[in-house]
Amino acid sequence: MDSESGGGKTTLFIVVFFLCVISMLSGYFYYAMGSSEAEAQKKLADIQAKTARELADAKSAAEKDVNMSQEEAQKKVAEIQAKAAREMATVKSTAEKEVNTQKAITAAKEEMLKKAQARVDTELADAAKRVRAAKELQNQATAVAASADARKKEADEAMKKAKQTNDANAKKLAEEKKKIAADAAKKVATANAKAVAAANEAKKVAKKAVDLQARLNAADAKLRGKNFERSGKYAAVPGYYRTGATWAGDHFGISDPNWCRNRARQLGVASWGHRNASHPTTKYKNSCYFYKTAGKYDGDGNDDIHMVGCAFGGNPKTGCRNPVMGFVGWSYQAKIDFPHNDRWYQYHANGSYNRGRALNRCASDNGCVGVTCRGDGKQCWGKNKLLNRKGHNDRYTWITKKGWK
Image 1: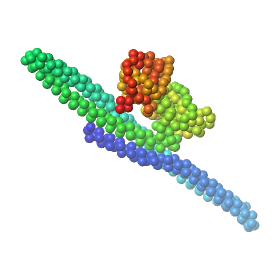
Image 2 (image 1 turned 45 degrees about the vertical axis):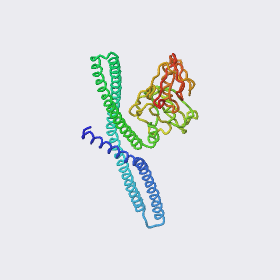
Image 3 (image 1 turned 30 degrees about the vertical axis):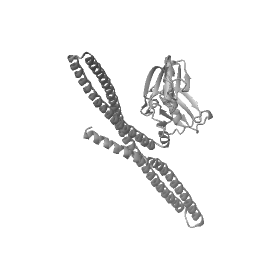
């Protein structure tokens, strides 16, 4: 990585840190705007009350002073009213300036957030590219290892044949193959080292990019108000899709939005939503709702009941990622079963859908280590253990990474 690129990334980290710090003041700005208006209203009310008292005093004085003419009394009233008008104009002007200043500051920060988001998007794209490159190097390392194993096998067989025949030429050929196998073995170590280094670097870059995005999301949520901040804890936005989404049903009696997200993953849908206990309809209080597909949605800062988020990553504002059936790494075992370790069972007439849903269900279930399905996919069993391994012509098993540990 060149120095210019490194400097750019350092600048980005500083910008994001600055945004996160100033976003902590955003609540104050919204409060201050409301407070300025409230304070202005109070001052105006005080001026009106004061003016009413002064007018009442002037009227009382005029009634008592028999020498005061009507013209003088009207002049006194006009002075009181003019003074009140000046004071009220000053209060209004001051309040408007404060609110406009605070709005300008907020708008400037929003613009900074947009620019920082563009930079973070670049970081995320670079991280994804590095992950793909690391996987390719891992595949290459696997291929090199397989080739080295084949060369060694050839060398062993050639040496065995040479010893049996005591043929000088055969021995010479065997030695050459042995040397080739040794060189191939050295390449394995080099390829593995490159693959490991690339994987570690990709993981490091990806973590930084994800952390940056999380901090930006938090800053943006803080800046946009309490409902965005509330939903931002779940990587969601307040409100619900009015258009651009395909409905996928409800689930009632759930107070934790995290449950809705995990269920959406199990179902293989793009987006999840949650309604809190403030919903006016009893049936919908504390419930989940789902969207099979979902477009971009900026959120509704005035909605303190609903929130929507993405099941497989992304953010409603920029778009949810497409559902990924079986979104963890799996090891596939054809015609293999692990009987009597069933955690759960599910059936669906659409075998392809049922299989994908079972994989997502297992991926969201901390106690699930694998899934075994019938050949047509209509029946699937989640496994809590991988014992009693046996062959079966009509069983296919997917094992999670944790299942191998």
